[in-house]
Image (cartoon, one colour):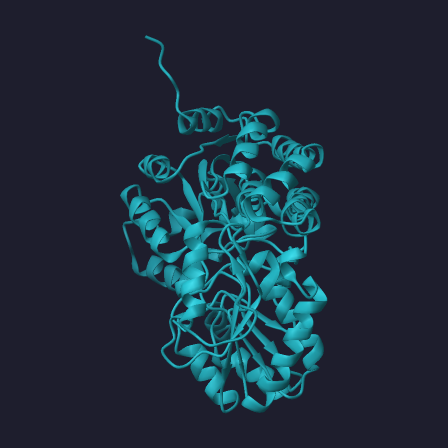
Length: 465
């Protein structure tokens, strides 16, 4: 009977054959990935529209073009990042040379989410390939059209480099039972715990890109109209289904009133008087999430929006004024609801932020240097952005990742290459002259003095001289 090799087995065999290690192979995979995005652009854009109602321009900005730019950045800088790094050798070991170099880990599992089903699967893929690994991709079953297109084209463009496994929880569970050299997961906290438990069985390192409630603080020193438009863009992009979207707004009551008016104007400017008719406004991914968002809105106070249509999964951009204890403030919203929360001022805002799990991002809209310094010095978050939400993802030199409950590990650009590599140290000491004779047993009083001088701190040796 013919033995059927699993996708993980094929990825393992390809890596162990040694074909992935040369720089030329890595660069070729990045070029192939970019070519796939260019040549199958229409297929991916159509799939994203079917899964999430994404406008083709938003698909280009936040998904297809984003991955292309990431791969191009990796391709442009990879050779320099992979150069060995010399390390000074202490006197006790000389003559010798020491250096570190980035070596591939092996087979990487990337588990993607449904909200950005292309970007959040293929951007990690690009980094893993650049680092010289083979990759098994598990796209989200909640974005079936995108998953199907990935399964159609990845084998053609990245044969021998990446495998795609479609399916739901059973397929993911089976994958997690396999041995990988790194697991990269983007999703929610509950699923992340399942991933970590499975990884622990093989002592597999993990990168977890999670979420949380990312706050925005607004004070009187900022331009409220511009701040409102940026907040509305960040919140309602992809119908609010973005892990770094502003999850709630903190401000003094005298700021919240005019800010609320400006947010309403901004929503109209972005999506027209009826967002349901706007091709630029997305849809909720499925009925379960739609029902969850409806329950959150109904249990709070809606001050703008709230219109919805279950059949088309349309949910209008909605502003809330939550009361203490409202469910909308107890969990990550992940939808087009934006609570406006009054605080007494800077100190209470920081207390509010620090009283919750560390957020994936923290947004501060203020021109006051003291306010900026206070948030920088007294809070912890995956990222800190002043006067703009979400845009830090587009800066390839910045690491993207969470801290605490919002995740562990980071990627993008060089940080991706380092995430998917082992920085291996190498020491090369010639056999002649064998200076180790000075420290070999048997130990004598003379050797004791020599060893003491060799291992003494540099400053101490200098003072003695």
